[in-house]
Image 1 (tube, helix red, strand yellow):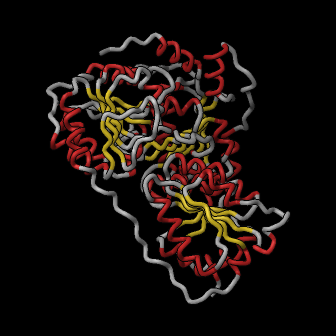
Image 2 (cartoon, rainbow, N blue to C red):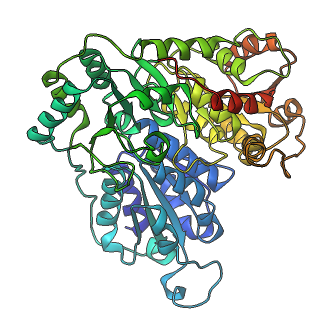
Image 3 (cartoon, helix red, strand yellow):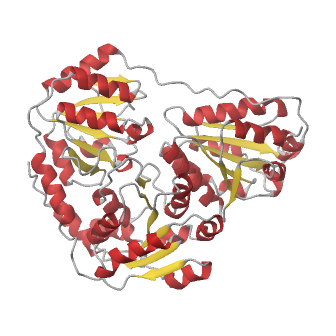
Length: 544
């Protein structure tokens, strides 16, 4: 058989269901074999969209999403989505065609050293140089991608190797390592520090979701009566409605949740990655005791010096500590939680138009069931969504906060609908982020994935304006013009709505979900609230 056939059989062996990508000359042998494969190839309109779809699919399922490109510009178009997946700890396997090995040693049309190009943004980057190594390469790529911390494997497949014949080889048996149990002495040390703490607080990171340990987290918090803050990427690990939830941390400024960290004497970081919220922002004076519970040892950082490090299975660690530590009688942060809840609801009925960010977030939450999946793009709206959207379940508010790349929301919503066809999928995006991958609207319509795209329209790079005004008191080169988004939606065959008043938003979102097709909502936003928030937080007095 051809090497390309063996390669696809190996992908089938890894239980790959979808491959996102674009066919090209150098991957034609693989594309031809896929015609006879149960794997569904989803043709996208840009390789970046394909990588983002694989990125979000990997994050939602815990299994590698797969994307495919041809050589040269096709491969380089994967880079942003691949880098996002790698830094956000999403398992992904990226595949690229390559020119024949007979011309890799010299200057040649569209040839780039792809292995070294992808090496800094992946865990494993390799070229298939001989047909007989295909089973080993594919098995290793998938194993490395899912092993903690998850990330990207990249495979470069030269066209002459793909077209060559191969001996009678078969895929390798799938084996992935289990997380080891944490050392008992470390569990006892952590339990002792927590028991002696006056004001402990838990910070949960995305690792809790990856470990499917959200129930263990809630059980730990309830057993020991400790309040929980989550990073942006861990929203929903404890339901926001839970009385021990303090919401999300990660805003690059003092916020109400920061008050809990300022008062805490022990901070229990569980499944936390530094790319989510750097310690110098929440541990400036380096005076707190830090307990690190994660699958791998802590990164070295002067603001993250540990009192105890517990390395191993996160769920087992939390259950063991809950059983051994002494619970506290009262929750020190109950007043803080009440302040946070009241602030989130303060502008829920504000009639101003364009609509204030706070009301958009509130109306979005009220219009969706708890299991709906919201994919936030990156921009000013992300700060409001991350700070105020009340997630009740894990992986129902997907935010890129490691690499934090614009353009993820539309392809991400498509991936979400493929993973969870019975749940609403909402892309929450700024007008700038939407236009970066809006071409994937056609992909969504063609493959039948109903999604709602909620555009926060201000005709500016709003987040950059926010930073410019904070630093210099004026904005620089952030304005642009938009198409008529309703007509734009219609040109694809989608439905478009324009919100004309604050009272229109809630019924419009509900209608868009019930339309059961691709819907684009143009919602004007008043980002003057950005600077008001900056001023408010600058004058913040902690309520506890």
